Length: 240
Image (cartoon, rainbow, N blue to C red):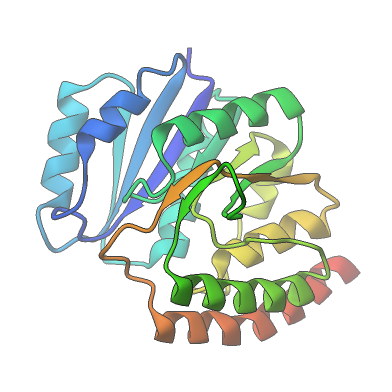
């Protein structure tokens, strides 16, 4: 029986999609994968469908045309919530969060009973967080602004590993499309906080900065501008 469904949004990932890493992740009992192909123009969808046809506990949700990562994640979560899994969540297609860390986070999500468990890239002694100094500094600036927008203490809103208790609360939170294209992670957390959800931030032991990320300086600037809109929308949700 499926107990955990992991959503993986994909867009033009044919050159760096390591399906063997995902195959290893499937060794975890009760875990299944839902790939969401967001209108890829390369061979990504063909690769995913071939993988799903040859592997148990793998499904593919094709979206056309391209809708952006925010909507791909939302559609994936909506599909995952149709099943009987107790925990649903999403990770990045580049597996920057290694499989063993993904499994550890899903275990925490099952054990804690919290509404959300989110990975956090905190570089301290005893961890292996491989992140460029430039991205780290940008991330710290953005995280500070995100904390102000959310009116909550959070170290890392943008780590691509987040898991949630499958519940009516989560269904309500993802029922409406995200207003933000670039900072939907912050908006998602904000919607949960507006519902007084319990969110636990878990420091990762390992994370690697995989080359080829589609998030650059301009994207971070756009995400920062989105925070103003997010704060306004969250204020309206809290009043409701």
